[in-house]
Length: 417
Ligand SMILES: O=C(O)C1=C[C@@H](OP(=O)(O)O)[C@@H](O)[C@H](O)C1
Ligand SMILES: C=C(OP(=O)(O)O)C(=O)O
Image 1 (cartoon, helix red, strand yellow):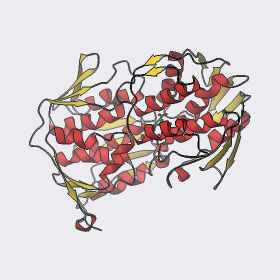
Image 2: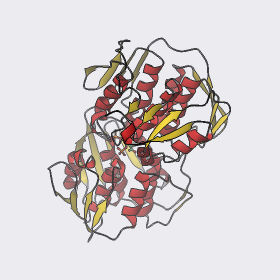
Image 3: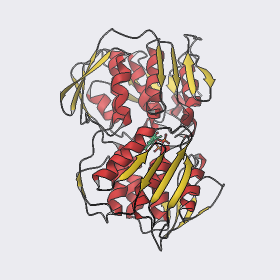
Image 4: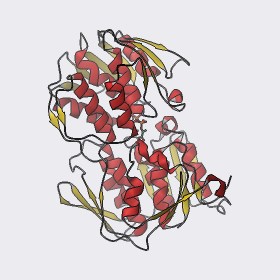
């Protein structure tokens, strides 16, 4: 399904109830499963990645398909490894088979887990024979994915000797580790974080009642739209003292003239102003999921930028560095890659590609989510495979329609090659 996007003339008093956080939801589902599902969770995010998690946790089958959900792949590998008597094969999409898990598998093996690679060494699918894990002292590189660390930490309380995890290298996505530790604490499990060492003693989670907050990564697309449209947008459901590192989007968008003001605890008003920074320098080591939003925003507002901390982008739903450079070039922007972990733009443009207005999304929800607001500058821009947003934000297109956007379905035959 391809959508041609026609924006309304202006956006006035838009009110958006954001989807719930998929990262929090997938942790809460896992932790609650470890309590025997005795807690009460009001509601979790309803999207592909949480459905994959719920299906896997409910399944008595031996073959578990987690689709494209990175968190589900990593968290469930740890979960099934510590279920004595359970034997499963965990697999996912073609892309999931290219997303590395070796660091996690080796750390779990060090804890006593029995995990084999079914195909290529270092990648899913994984054959897991569950058993009681011993745990103990484990050292692992923290500069590839924080999800390995979150996975180990969440199951650590049930290891015979607990876990003393030593992180080496410069950690990426650190706020997601804090989110994990914060949620474990709400379920009554204490961890001790001391510099690069995190220790969890043997203990058990206490079931609790929990409400999941809205998703700050999803909020970023509305900040972007606010910056492009100059419209008033109110976002509902966000938590002010959030567990999500992507709440830094508030600070980042001040650069683009967006002042965000809390009406009350969970209602955030975006007020655009013309007060825009002439140049953007950002380090996104802690907020990799904002990379597409921020890069696209800089280009469209014609702001030269240097964004660092992007080393993990190549192993996400697609190689996001490659995808961004290719698609932004279609819109005329020539992006530089000073090194493996940064992107820069100094204002160089070429004539827009003749296939110009059709954006490829590469099975990556964030490509569709971040490029759709560009319609405000380029009415009629097409987002190919618009259905990809269901990974984290299935209601996105309905939300755009509700504030006056027109979305026309376009057949593949009517699009450039
Ligand atoms: O733990 C999580 O919920 C996530 C951690 C991050 O991944 P990495 O730690 O692999 O960067 C982030 O990109 C992903 O969307 C969600
Ligand atoms: C990277 C992402 O998700 P995951 O790694 O969980 O697939 C994302 O949602 O941007």
